[in-house]
Image (cartoon, rainbow, N blue to C red; front, side):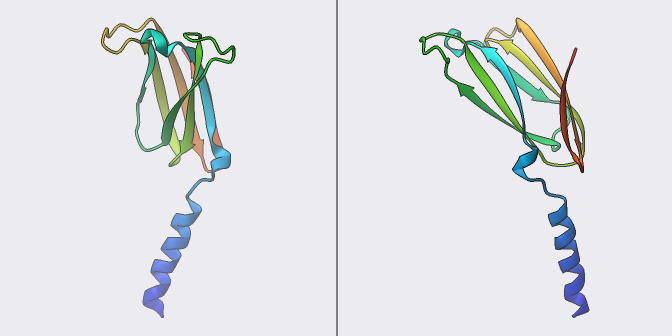
Length: 116
């Protein structure tokens, strides 16, 4: 019985360290992918958040109009990291705009703050 107790307790503790989708946050950046420009992102410290990109169509329905790049952040572990975004045509290599966000994940939640 004792040999099963420790693995069970470890499973319970690991289960307590997971996060629910209620802690997801979003970063929304305007862009126009039809021109070849994209928001290229880098996460400075991996393993703290997962980042998923979704491009939302223009609200006005105009072909070639501005779109919203929505990034969904899901916490993975407690810690801090920066996410850097560069608006550029990847084959050109020179960003025309930059954004930087500090992401803080704690046991109580997640904060996302734009920094310069």
